[in-house]
Image (cartoon, rainbow, N blue to C red; front, top):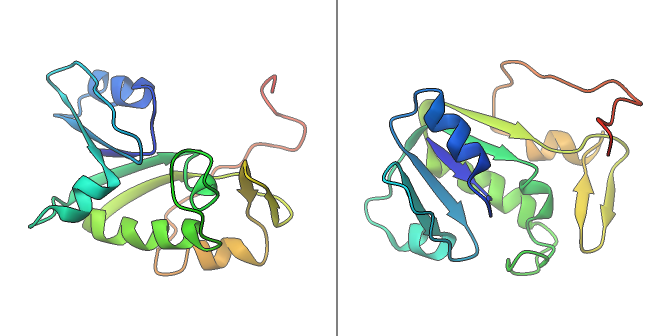
Length: 145
């Protein structure tokens, strides 16, 4: 199991509590989670690995929409999110799963906070991936945010 884009080990803790044998976190920032079931790598460390580990399941929750905007230590790149999604294909083992959560609505970039994916960019983001299922929150169901 790999978690992409995580500054605090919340998702890692949930995955371990639900039976994941181990969790690796990939992040632009250097992290040091103190748990025997957790491993942290920067994106640069992962890129330098040969052979690169492949994962059965990848989790990216509210992370990819920030890639390329420079807010979290990543390089500024207008297509940073699309490039990050292509990298996911190298991270996930063939036949594996990517659990992806991104904001969906009218296409939007709010500099330098995040993107929203709509009719134009969402299909480009999901290119090369097969959609198994999707879950969407109903309009007005922002969960107190």
